[in-house]
Image (tube, rainbow, N blue to C red; front, side, top):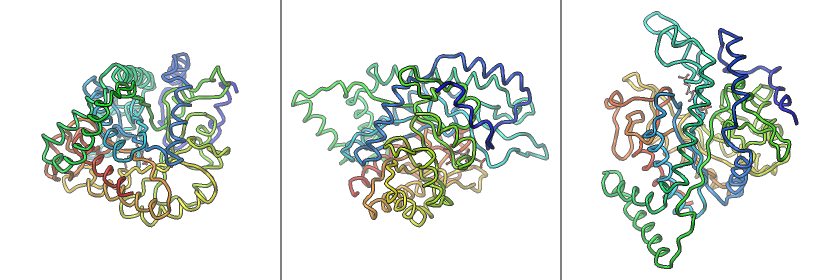
Length: 444
Ligand SMILES: O=C[C@H](O)[C@H](O)COP(=O)(O)O
Ligand SMILES: C=C(OP(=O)(O)O)C(=O)O
């Protein structure tokens, strides 16, 4: 392979691409990006593919989560730390309940671009380009802010690099010690009204840790954590500029993140995103909404995973709580019958968005939970593996989704509604979800 082999997508229709007003500025930014060092190493992508192969075989569970849209100003040490802490806490609970390794993947260090329902937004009679993520333009509603600026792609690279650097430091430098993470969970259980319900599970985990300590078990795995980065491969110019030939194998890897996914709005079989993803060796996710037919899923497998390699392809199901029980079984049945070994993961966020009476885009915690329940029920009935969850969350105490143990009401949404795009579970709702999914997993 040569770096040019990645360019086959360029002759195909690419949905959801920004209209950059200055093509020379774009060319310059992309040339700079192409000269920058990789953000991840191809060997790490292989490692993640191996972990996801375990998920596809039913021997591991995927926890994938983070912001809907990362922002440059929101990319602070505290925000990164809180997100990571929340994911690690969720992972401990899930690991104990599922008794299988939990593969931890952040929607982090690259989640800076957004597909939108409309290319324009109108407020008080003024119409401007829609916000497409910090990689493209700014959220402020002014003509300057909303004009796509390719220099932002370079900022995306540098922000992703800073995030990865800190995440690597936290996960290997002692912050992620299992006993520490468990102690945070004990605090959640002891100090939050919603946490009390999980006392028993937390006590069991505590007992298991004490037992291992008494036996003198203290493996390296307790002190460090394997953590991967993922984002939607949306802006293909950016992803292509960061695609490199792996010197070990000659294969192409998109070194902007370990795993990339194709969104519900860009998964056209004859479109540029699927073509791009078919050329790289990274593990690939594809979001599948309620209109996906089994034929679509099988054709995606044929194009993206022609060798039927477990770990290569993850189907991220986002049907909505009201549809998952009806729409998912046929997909799982037909894909399983085809012999493909995909990982099945539930995104219980994107099919459950609605506009509250206050005007905020929100999601009900109960719908999120119900979609995960439906996902587990379908897999239980078919004898297949509910391989994981993909969640939009933050480690901060925002008020963006309604419900949860420490209930947030529609009237509370305005208090800390901070997302740049879609509503995220806050810290306590995320932990709530982890404990409830853990209970489901045990039932499974
Ligand atoms: O995160 C997903 C999409 O980018 C988001 O739901 C699109 O939102 P919109 O319908 O407001 O454009
Ligand atoms: C846009 C997203 O989801 P979907 O493609 O499933 O709508 C997302 O996960 O940010």
